[in-house]
Length: 78
Image (cartoon, one colour):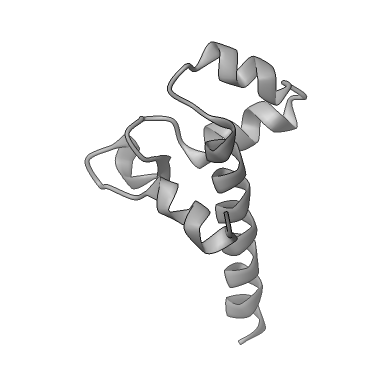
């Protein structure tokens, strides 16, 4: 599955978590996933703790964050 397809797992809805990017069908934000990973929590543990999540969702969150970082660089350069 390509990066563009992975982004289909991310939704932004003002009515869910104040419009933060979330995994589709959940209230789990991209930020939540990034925070857990940055704390050293293994992907397997995250998946055990949150049964609605799949490994593809973790990858989608990482792709989304990487894309957002790239957009931030472009805006800052202008």
